[in-house]
Length: 523
Image 1 (tube, rainbow, N blue to C red):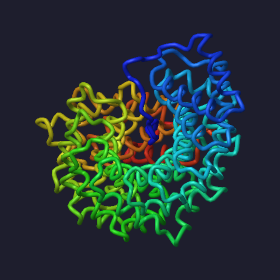
Image 2: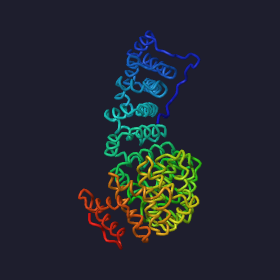
Image 3: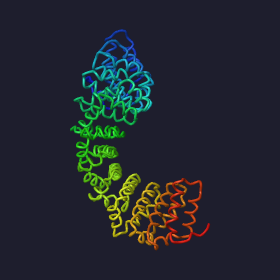
Image 4: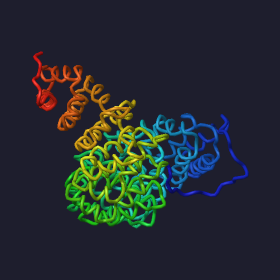
C-alpha cells in the first residue's frame, strides 16, 4: 500500500536533476543549516524539486540536511521538506525506504504528525505509510512510538489526512506484534467507527486492518465487543459498496470474523447471506474469491446450512466449480459443499447436479492443482454417505468412475489418496456394488492391502473400515476376503498392543464377519 495524497509544488520539469553532486550538496547544507528562514525555505523547496526527479538512490549524507529541515519551526519549511522526504520514499528506488530510516528520519516524521498544518500531517503520514511497506520498517515505526499519534490523526476531518493515516495503520497490521499493540492502544474502536466513513479509501483501509486483526481469536472478540458487534452491520453495508476493492475487503473481513461459531450466526442474522450470494456473480475475480471464502466459513455453522441452500447458493457454487482458471475459488467452493454435506444438505447438493461436476475434476484432472483435488475429494467423501450420491458416482463415465477413485488411492497426494479411499468405503455400503468393486481391474483389494500395510494409523483404520463394509456382503464377497495374507494382517492388527483400541476392535469385528460360517483356524 504505497499510495498516499500529498501536496505538489510547481517545479521546472524541463530541467531534471538526476544526481546530487558534492557541490550541490554543499550548497544545500549551507542553506539548510543557516539561521535565515528564507534560506532554509530555499533549501526545502530545492529538495522538494529534487525529490521528484532524482533517479539514483538517496544517501544518508544527502538526507542529513533534509532531516534537519524537518526540525524547523517554520511551517513553509516543514511543508516543502516533508513533501520532499515523502517523494524520496515513494518515487525513489526501493532502497530509499531503508536509507531514510537508517538516517534517523522516523522521530522527526512522527513528531510532525502532531503539526498544526494538515499539509505537513498529510506529507509526514504519507511518508510513514510508504516506509511501512517493508517488514523491518514496520517494526521500527512502532518502536519509535508512531501508533498513538497515528490513531489521534484519524480524528482529523481532512479526508487526505485520514486516508494517509488509515493507510499507514493498515500497513502496520501486517506484523503480529504490531497488531497486539494496536489493539491495546484502542485501534479496534478507531477502525470499526471509520468503516462508516464516506471515503472509499478509508473504508478499504479500515476493513483491511480489521481483517488482519481478526486472524487472532482474542482480537476477534475485541472487534465484536465494540458497539455490541456493530462491525457486522458496517461490513455487510460495505459488501454492497459500488467500489470493487471495498466490497472485496468487506468480504475478507467477514470471512475472518466468521472463524468463530457465534460470529457465523450473527453475520447471517444481520443479512450477510443476502449480500454475499449476489457477489458470487461479480465481474471482479478477487471479490468472487473473497465472497466464496466468506460463505465457506459461514457454512460451518449448523444453523446456517438450510439458509444457505434456501438463498439459492447451490446453482452459483456449481457454476464456480467449473472455473478451472480460478483454483482458489474452486477450493472454497468444494469446501463449502463439504460443510453443507456434513450438516445434512447432501440431498440438496445431489439434486442440484453437483456430483458430476465434482467428479469431473478427479476424472479430468490435467492442470488441476493439488489443493483443488484435495478439497474436491474431501467433499465427495462426505457426500458419498448419501445413497443418491453413491448411485450417481457408480453410474458416472459408463460405470467406470470407481476405477478412477482406485487409481487416486495410489497418487502422490496423501490427502487425496485417503479421501478417495473414504469414497470407496462409502460406496461399499451398497452390497450390489461389491462384485464390481472387488472383481474389476483395478480391484479395491489392492487398496485394502496397500492401506492395511501402511505405517499411518489413519490409513490402517480406513482399510479395516472398507474391509468391514465388504464383510457385510454375501458369502461370495466374504470368500474373496479370505485371502491368507489379508486374514493374517487383520489378526495381527487385532492382537498388537501398539495399535489403538479402535483399530483392535475394528479388526476383531471385521475378522468375525469375514470368517462367519467358518471355523477360524488357530494362529
